[in-house]
Amino acid sequence: MTFKFEPIVLLWILGASVLAALIYIFLILKTDWIIDLLKIDQGFDDNRIELGNFNSEKIIMLALILIGGFLIIDYVPNFLQYTYLAFKKQVSESGLNHIEESTFSRPIDYFNWVIAGVNIVIGFLLLTNYHQIGKWIQQKEKPVGNI
Image (cartoon, rainbow, N blue to C red; front, top):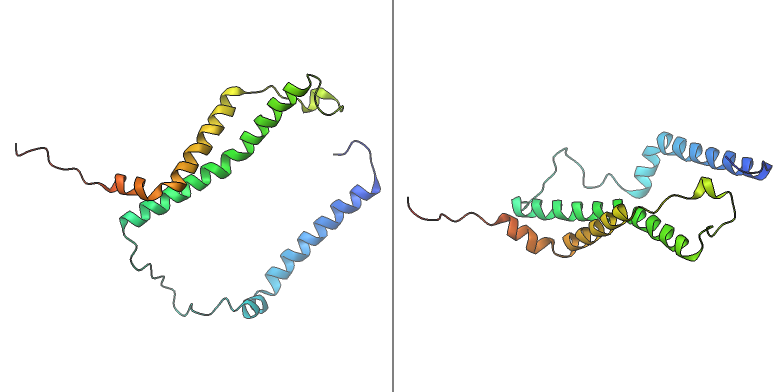
């Protein structure tokens, strides 16, 4: 996993694994104490969830917000990676780092770079205009005429 074996790397990996295991065990064994400390159980006396005034228009708006958020979250890392690769190619053909180039270099995929950018823009537009898009989707078809 590393280029040179160093004991400090092994200690970091071991320490992070032990810390994650301890947090997991603490969260499983001390759940009642955590619930009492954070007062999470207040207001949950019955198993029913009241949604109140949650009609189909609000469900559509919530779906638009979720879709826009997922588009942005899913495609920002790809867009940043392709941007970095394009920048790296523009700066130097041999790359920014002097480590063995064949293991780290990937060809720039302009098609996927554009797709990632378009999806980010669509996600942003969905997040900023969810109300207007929701109303547009909710429009009922008007009868054309009496036939």
